[in-house]
Amino acid sequence: MVTNRKKTINCAIIGFGARGISFYERINAYARRYISSVHINLTIFDPKEHGCGSHSPRQADYLLVNTVASQMTMFLDKTCEVSGPYTNGPSFAQWAKDAGIRKIGSNFYHMAEDSDVGAPIDDNDYLSRAELGNYLQFVVDLLTANRPRNVDVSIIRSHVIDIKPLSEREFIVVVDGDYKQSFEFIFMTTGHGTNILTENEQRKIDFVSSNKHKNPNLGFIRSPYPLSMMESVSPDARVLVQGMGLTAHDVIAELTVGRGGRYKENRGRLEYIPSGREPVISLFSRQGLPFSSRAINEKGVSEAYTAEFFTLDYFKSLRQEKKKFDFFEDVLPVLKKEMLRAYYHAVGKTTCIDYEDFRKIDEILYPLHGIVFKSAVDYKRYIYDFLEDDLKNAYAGNVSGSVKAAADVLRDVRDTMRYCVEWGGLTPESHARFVSDFVPIMNRIAVGPPLVRNRQLLALIDSGLLCIDLGPSPILEIDEKNSAFRIVGTFSEEITTQSADVVIQARIDPFDINLERSPLIRNLFSKGFLTEYVNGDYHTGGLNIDRNYNIIDLNGGVRKNVWSLGNPVEGPCFFTFVLPRPGVNSRFLLDSDKCIQQMFNEIEVNYVTSR
Image (cartoon, rainbow, N blue to C red; front, top):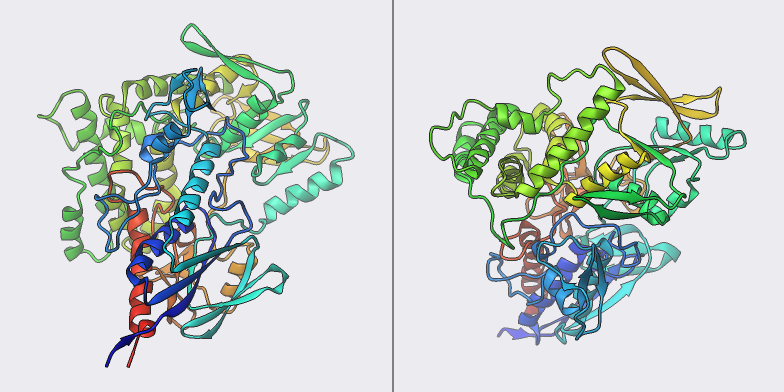
């Protein structure tokens, strides 16, 4: 005779940003099927505010997300091909409208429910990251209030520092303060990591420490988050910002608007009105190009470009011939062909397209190819024109504008790109080059800031507070004699040298298990509980997991009750940090569902029924 008995299951989520929330939603959804047979004790570990991850609701409202509000959600819908039930809930945009957020000028405010001040937000507005944090916390509160009666939840605001296996199916989780608890199932969603210092970084820190008494403005900021670290930068300091991407925009906003400056419209352009407390900033990077801005969205909430060449069927067929692709020989030419098609379709040309002539696309991917800058003035003029051209293209739209339509292909074919890249889908050498050479290009042209950010760059250049005149890949040095930093730009007809007091590295560390500072990751890696995913002789830095997202230990054993998703698995997987989009069969949500389905399958087999 088979009888059901109520079984209590202890499971843990370590890290509670968007990925952790997704696991929480899936646990609640599946648990409803087991109301009478399973009781879930869920413990969530995260030292930060619950649910918001890196999107703190307390950060400044001038720090923006780079995706339109309507294209973000934390809830599944009927388009998601999942095995379990789904929870209904609003998208980010709908939540914002329901919360009474309205637009006044270029800013957004929470207004009274019946207020008609300002204008309603638009689906294509870029809201602040603080509001995204509020949305994520709303999702957590909604899930908690509506969770099934067989799910109990507790949140421990501490760092997990170790996991100790007791058996194949039971683990002890250790947190700061020596608190310990046993669990049958663990989900690791620890998010962005922090790397140990490089020798070069340590040298800069030591230099600042030993020379600060000679130059009180001297400083080195290895990573700008939290942005409150910018408070240490004196208005009198000469500042170098290393990087021209999304993080650089945060740094610039903090050092300008964050210090009381403001922008105003002036005959179709922005003008910056300084507060007098801003330092002078110079931007530089390896590519030497600012990120291209996001175009006016013409694709609504869920519309996407439909590929003709860069398709899953094509690459599945090619996989029959080649186990591993060379990205630059097998994948990139097809991608460029698809981008070319979108480029010409945007201007109404659908026939007589020469798909062997990639010059239009190469100008988008490699705009500096063949260009030699004679001088800093020459380069500065080019960058200014580059930003103005980018804004023209952005205003033309991501469907009607040829340049942005082509660039947006990179976003819309991301799942097919994942098929090509993931789980060692590229040859080791090609995989390494793809990550080091092409991914930065892809990020620069397809996942840049809202177009207002590049308008602001032009305004700051006009004001004299921002300089972009160092050329690509300038050389940063320490000037011991003058207790300052020195940066050298090399041009065909001159070499320029600038001195600076403060260097700010405007980047987020990539997760690298070999360099990770987290006590949890270091402890688990040192004892072989976690290992690195390696593609041949290419060391990705990401966690080694199987296709079910279970971690693989040093002996090759699969820990079937421990899963990991998000940034730590950016190695076997690709582009794991994109939030779900309404009306789209989001990989983000599918991955969470796959893991939780496995957990409940395991519960059903090993815990629920007895003879």
